[in-house]
Image 1 (cartoon, rainbow, N blue to C red):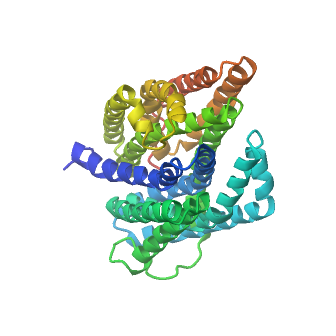
Image 2 (image 1 turned 45 degrees about the horizontal axis):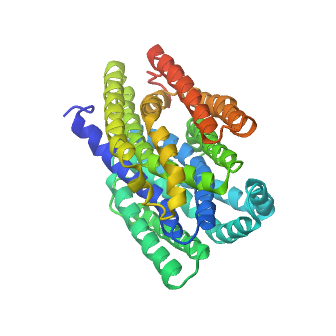
Image 3 (image 1 turned 45 degrees about the vertical axis):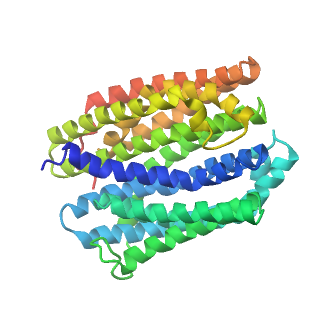
Length: 440
């Protein structure tokens, strides 16, 4: 069966998309639960999720580089090299997590005051309570993301999916128990988040040290600067790209704080729904990285381009189809995350506009996997730095705050950003410089 067959594409894309949605649900579970308690609590957990997405983006970026390397080694049956890549990925992610915890210990309170400066003192107090507990989950996030990415690179997308299902079940059940039965409020959501993340990390460690998989840490490998350099040299660009992207999302949330707390809540509710579609795109991007990466490893440029184009078209069709029911029945999708009628009312027009942008967002998301695979991740970084920070946020801030256009100003900034990125990604893809077969 050909590498680029529909079955092979879906065998990778579907489990990864499902895992991404479930991973998203790890944070969204807290929003769904706390959304029944109060608007202030929902705003805190929503912004906290964005902050954790920023932290996770550092792990994810480097892990994408590790996954590509694991793919190349696994397809040549060099499983010990692939396992050594995973081992060093865990070392890097652990170092990042310690850095994050140190920064939080030294400047955490000042950072929270800065982020929540336009909000009420009660929201700032709730944010301190939430982060004081949940931040200890960061080291296990690094373990979770690093191991999952390496398993996907080795062609085993189902194991991370199954473990993420277990993590989410624990998160939801604990959240319900602590918030609604024990009445712990936002602290209950934080504890459920912490315990479920710890469980997810421990289960993945058990899989790589004690499991019967080809990708397995069989011993404590000798530290290798070569492997660190391989992972970092490719992954650091992707990490920066993801970091800039997530900081852009946070910037947009903070701009909505200039409108009202309800605007923040409505915008976040709409984003939660649209993130389901983004998760599907991520699944196809992973399939593109894996399958096109295999062909590039074989120096089969024509086949790599054919696979990349097939996955791009499939991603565009499926994400647009998914957006249709959300566009027709936005209220019911928003009700998943909150029962507050005012929040839902604020979220409906925002969600509809964001869904109309799906063909634009799916366009560049469906191309960037191929560009990263061919060693052109620097282009992705550049676009995700320039477009959100020099186009989207300045336009949105000016129209929203100075021209008093509110949410319309926010959406105008997004539209210009997406159009610019679509044009640039299209030009880069057509140049075919990403068909690089010598990245290792």
